[in-house]
Image (cartoon, rainbow, N blue to C red; front, side):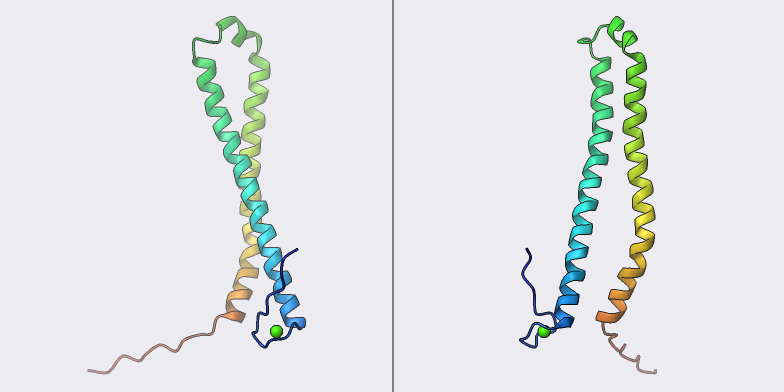
Length: 120
Ligand SMILES: [Ca+2]
């Protein structure tokens, strides 16, 4: 379990700290999930490339490739499906997250007044 951080630095653990910590934990979990999904998509891409190179190598005979042709087609469709689903889901998730991120950034970041340019 993660340690509760005193976010507003007042020396006490209040509702604000717990709310902030749960938001941080949610962001961390979301990031871990996104990392594992990205690794799965990369594994799918790399497996397709390695598998294709393996099939073109002289180790595999032509008769074996012909015998497995249907299975190989399914393999490529499944791997491409993983990659496509990853891309679609990340695009869909980033739509929902952008509003959360903008909420956090507007609430926690104070606007710094811009220095005025001296008139010449
Ligand atoms: Ca506090």
